Image (cartoon, rainbow, N blue to C red; front, top):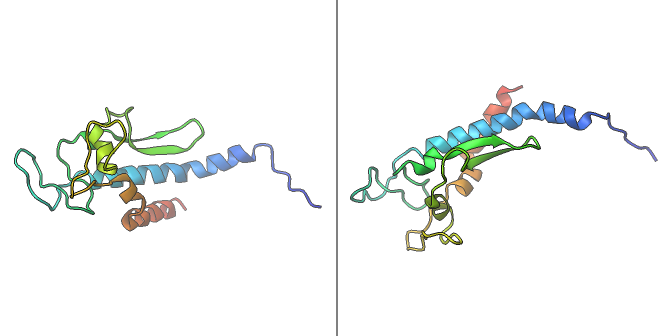
Length: 142
């Protein structure tokens, strides 16, 4: 039986090699979210709101700017990155959860109306435009 023996610092070398790619993914995702959440919607312009609301299926429209203000990225101790609404950037408003989930647990806000939630983070995960931008960012590293 042949046994594969890795170099003693193989894990560290791999981490160093992958770090630019992980950072590019985090940076690209953050820029994408900031762009998508900094737009008016194409729905009804309700009195008292600065922008028209979003329609179902759209990213949530920018209204107060609180969600946009808390968007950020951070590198964790293990070298991975988190991107999204981060309390370390600015207080995450309860609307961040209410937009993503119709009835967030222990939230003072719910969106169980016929209009539904406006998932922004899960929408981004499946967004082909983001996927295309991520591929381009990673190709630019080569």
